[in-house]
Length: 390
Length: 94
Image (cartoon, rainbow over all chains, first blue to last red; front, side, top):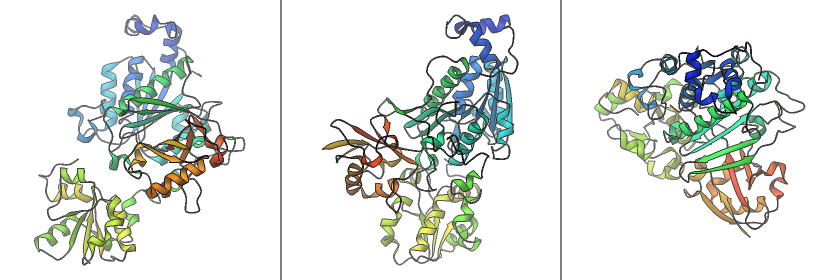
């Protein structure tokens, strides 16, 4: 591992703090100084980023950079253990920094208040030795992978869905990269997102802790990191499985004749045409209804169907009175239930799934189907704040 | 010959909510064809419209990627387990 300035010694306080490392042959003084000299960049201070940053700070990684642009929300606290209840509403970066400073003031925490992009990634990565991917979307995962390959920085990968997680170490000198495993992302809508699928709160704790372990092993140069190995964890079965990964000679990024030698437009690569997907799914504003309009039409008792395309478990949490539930996945096979309804307002949690539903309904000839902009979250914000948000 | 196919969490909804399904087949291609005949919803998640395996879904026989074996012509032995490994993006979902 390349290090900028190797510190000559630990202070007495640091010796006391890291004593359980110092007496281990695999770490020792030499290893602890490597950790202190190391610079690790965590992308995301969420479910995976929480245990990663906490354990790396506790272990004495000298410099930890964190990239995030979100604020702490109540719905984060079930799994994002770096943040606490008093932090709700604060920027995640501020909340994470104060928690990490309290845990270990010897460690320098550098906050990067930004969305990672093709414009800023290479400059940002240049200042770090390795990158930990704690993001939640395909465009950023491909961006991190490609930037790591181009810069020659290991990419410590982790991903989660419901009860199942994945981890690996990509983009080391001779190892495979994420694109060797998955040359292309799934088209939008074919794989359910976590916002639709949910996740067991402990799962990012397990996978993030694995990522922190791998980061530390790579820095120390000990053991066998997950290079060329793909670890799959199933919390329901409580079973780990390991698959072999190979470096693909034809890989567009790390192969022998790479075709991707600079960062590209990753939203486009992943089939996402603009940053505001809701607006692209329906052609124009006349196809959207606001929550104020919906309220007025409900009060007037207009003739129309209010269709809720969320999942039954979401419907149990909160619903708009008078709505009919048909989950998006069931809609194609249940179109006959809509016969006789022309005017329709369709909603989900935030407007993305209902946008897909409106496209589907229009294809099926329901030309008056309209999407409720902002979904039930906008309804709770602006019409009925007594309903619980999730 | 019957083989077990391990279904990952995101695709279980298209496989009758099961985590393991069984199908007949002496090659990976035959096995997947028989499996998607039983679970037709899985087909569009595994194959493109022109019948090719999608590039964000990897198929493993035991711990090996079929892309580095004989792809869909990979022969199956008794006791082999086939896994479907799709890409998953989640990390700090909102």
